[in-house]
Image 1 (cartoon, chains in turn blue, yellow):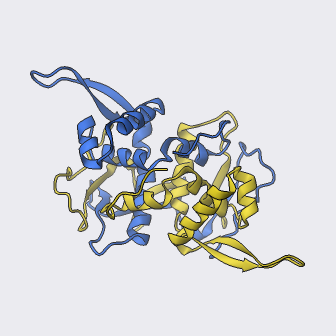
Image 2 (cartoon, chains in turn red, purple; image 1 turned 90 degrees about the horizontal axis):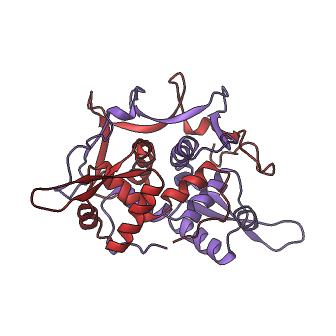
Image 3 (cartoon, rainbow over the protein chains, first blue to last red; image 1 turned 180 degrees about the vertical axis):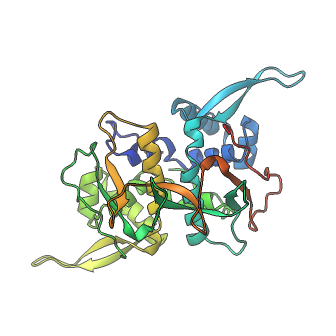
Length: 164
Length: 164
């Protein structure tokens, strides 16, 4: 695993990657979105070693993405289930944009494995940039400019689009 | 670094995570979106060891996300610069959704480091789910259903929203 940087990074992407920047972590979050909550379920479907799963779940709890809730099945001792918190739920666009990229650029002959759609209308959805007033902005028109938290003045002010 | 799974995973997220599931890789892509192209620029801004940077750039080239282009400065030998390909450009919503999550759930007192906005109108944007006809669908109304590539019949058909 990559080491954590010594200082808290100023960039939101770097801080998010500190939480999610591990293959297993993202796959655990994916399974949580699929409704899995039990340790053994995560272990079985991912084929992840128990000690690694324990460590990654613990990281996700510490990061506030997952919470432990006790449950008890008849005749069994109390166990814990792992549920997404509101911060975990808010990762849905991250998952949606990852799957969208994979469907396009890591395509297989079998077609998409999962379809994201509106539960109300059944219409398929994709991830896009939108303004506060609900206007869709094409990727090619997106520019990235320094915000108030930017401390590194050497960074270029505006991203030159590579293929615009 | 996490080991690659033995078989090609059926899930688009897993295939994408095979490319991006490393902290350094995502930060290199972030810097490429900021307009950096030169080896030494990536090295200086990220503080990444040369051998790790070489390996990650090589992975990104193999994955079709970055391409090498020769360039020559006066009096110097020919060198290579690293540019995003169209597949690399298509990662913008992934970066946008990561920064959006970090701005909300890994907030600092300094405010956002980077603002994504329309180059045409200057309006800030965020990442959202939209239909083909341009309707925005709230996250809470998104359901995930099996697509044609789904081979694991045991998976729950629909994501039960944890906080709906």
